[in-house]
Length: 211
Image: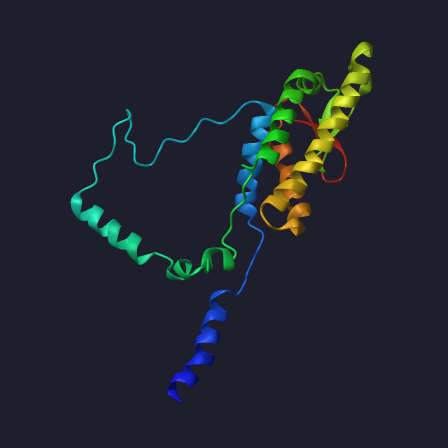
């Protein structure tokens, strides 16, 4: 009798462990957007120094007592449920945004090459601007030399197509297609934030301003 009474309790405990509580990881999405956008624009931020390194490249000495304590903490933090196939971090919706898939990186490479070869000069001239929806607009076509207008218009269309595709691809790659609009909104803000001084950006009301 006791053996059978334990079955419902075990079922309840198991159900509690796999309860899904997923939320959109806004901070992680912003960091992913910053990394992606800066790579496309071409001026990546310097890599932060490793926490374990001292100035001058010397490794920090960790006393044996601290190493032992760290080992105990690591052992204590082991996810026992993962040993039986239940990933609690995933089940609880632990925030994470990945942009390191082959499809995403292929789009990023295309966008970076196109930006450098065809679009950057047009941003600097004021012909192009960053729209408030995460795309590029031809703000002033008269600033584009006539022989280049067809090519620039095509490059803008291709860049916007790739941008829309990457927002969708990031959402799908992170197993949450429903996040596409939120990811697009985060990227839209990041394009504006990453715009260089002198470039034109569009505000929320649709007006243009120069950074």
